[in-house]
Length: 345
Ligand code: PHE
Image 1 (tube, rainbow, N blue to C red):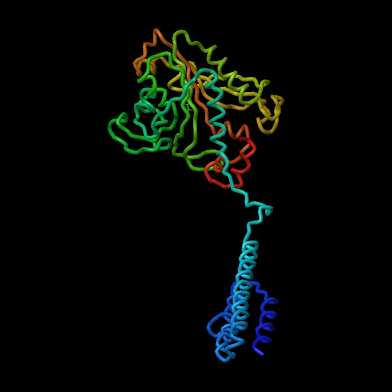
Image 2 (image 1 turned 180 degrees about the vertical axis):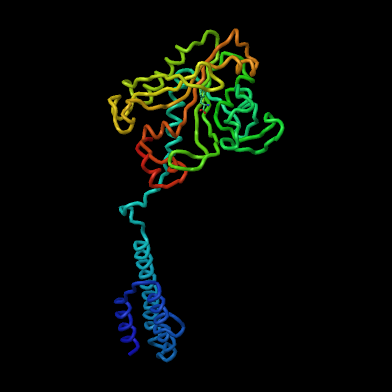
């Protein structure tokens, strides 16, 4: 009887399957726990007659070992199955990392800096919060010059009696010219990129802050021809080898003579189109020979040294290169706008 039950149980156990740890644990309890079916047979062992005890004992022990091994074996299969289920599928498409783009103003600033670096210019820097001296007085602005007015300049601290004591946000990067000349003896050959501020209503064509790059070259015998040659090279590097330049007389308090530079229209090549208002030319910068008064203000002997300066707006150049119609786009951080410059890197 008992022998048959042992065989029946063994057959049953050999057929067992389990798909997860839970069902496996249920099986272990069913057969091997204190109240399990295998254990129950051990309890019946007492009733077996002494001459059969040896044989039954052996069979029972075999059954227990068989059951334990079977459960262990199933446990291994379960674990392997679970591992397989949690495996990372390396063939699935990856979630791409969103990589930012360089801001168009940064792209163009870098391009301009690279061109002038190749021509021997080094970088100079100065503060955005400035005093009147560096932005106006040293640059030959008369005390009543309209650029000093509230309409143009942001004041940090305004002195009613003495304009020279005003603390302001610089309205152009020409202040860095002054700082460099005060600090350094000629020859000086620098460019200074930086942010400038003007108290203007924000529209598609004007903003209360924008970016400029200033250039300054001071040495013995620097002439207007040197200025023109450097600007021609610059324009051709930036807009292409066929670009032409033209200089129109202009006025700045700190340069004499002064000029504004146009380049041949990059859209029509100078033929005349809607973009250049049918003139064939677009304006890109202001320039001139440094006024002797400025050199003297900065402690440089104007009888020995001469020099030229130029200043350009980075937004303006960026507009021309990339046809951005609205200045406000540059400071709105609209990712759709910024992504358009991915290919320009
Ligand atoms: N500072 C002038 C401006 O902001 C530009 C300029 C710089 C002109 C240097 C001449 C020489 O408009």
